[in-house]
Amino acid sequence: MAKFYYEPNIVSGRTDHYHHFLAGYLLPVIADADLTKGDEISLAFSGPMTRLIHEVGFTSQPNFKTEVEPQIFGPPPEGYEVRNVRGVDGCNTAVPAGFAENVNAKLDHIFGIEESEYADCEPEILLIDRGEAPKEIFDENEHIRLSGSQRRTLSNMDEIAACLEKYGPVNRCFLDDKSFREQIIAFRRAKFVVAQHGAGLSNLVFAKQCKHVLEFAPEEKIGEQVWFKNLSKHVGAVHRVYLINQPFGKLNIVWNIDIELLDAKVKHLLTL
Image (cartoon, rainbow, N blue to C red):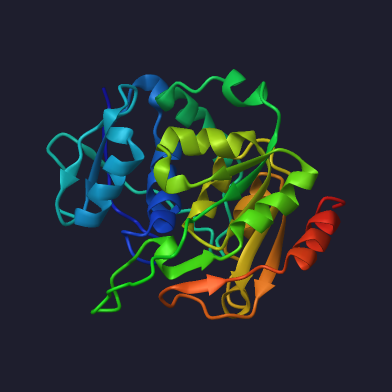
């Protein structure tokens, strides 16, 4: 059995950020591995990345052999071949041809996902709900990474959901409560994804029937990056942004969406 040691090769950002971890490391490793031959993969992480690999559930999957080492990027274990992978960061980095198809086929194998679990269901509008922002946030050091709802949230999610229900069944999904497998299925069932700018949109790589994506995002950030548009393009979805003239990245920022404007944007997007 071949044994590969994948050196951490994060494209950008912090290694404890879900987007950079998923797109910059884990999924490229999956794409590179030949699971049909039973490759055994050794994943070496720093502390935060060890937490993430356990959270997404790979260590418990019998079809994906892992040896998780909570170390600081040390030497490979004895008997392993050192490999590197090219990260696929949604931020201004092109996605290699066939990447999404390759990754999804292997994820089906790893998690035992059957096509009937999503193809036989009525396509949904997937609305990503970050939950309510906490009333008080204590972040003495300011650089500590907080959850998305602690940094940015939407104040009128009920109105947003009601608006979208005019266009089809809505799955209002709080990703933090979902397993990695459940997140894959949610994006597989989606025909239209509506979400705030954030790491959860990295899951677009799992979409198979999504035709439209609407992202709520601040003007100051979208002016710098194409972010998740690359992933939308690769899965065949039209990606549009609802621009918000409010701060980005600060603590406890609450955005309020103009429902009349949202309805007009959705109507137009669905004609594309």
